[in-house]
Length: 108
Image 1 (cartoon, rainbow, N blue to C red):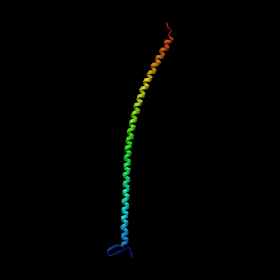
Image 2 (cartoon, rainbow, N blue to C red):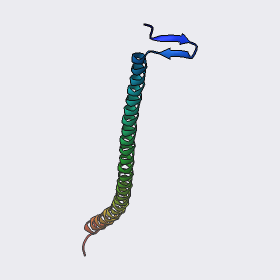
Image 3 (cartoon, one colour):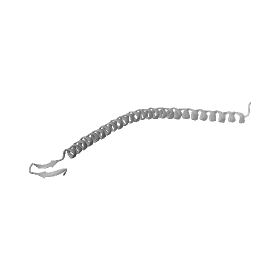
Image 4 (cartoon, helix red, strand yellow):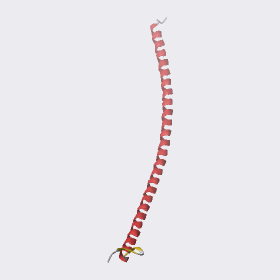
């Protein structure tokens, strides 16, 4: 009992072999379909993760920009304060110099 025969009608298959091939093809089709569905699901999950990371990066960038602005403002404020303190020190040095001169001059 041959499973595959070459006859006048062409190549013929035994019923059991035909059913095995058909079931194999259906099973392979189901397996490929499940694999594609899994890949699509994973791709969607990855795309969602990438979009969430983009949002997080945008938020982090805006926070970093805000912090940079605050740091620059503080640096400017501290530079002004340093300048004012320098002027105060210079004035105190002038006062000290004048007091020393006044102490050196004999009182009349």
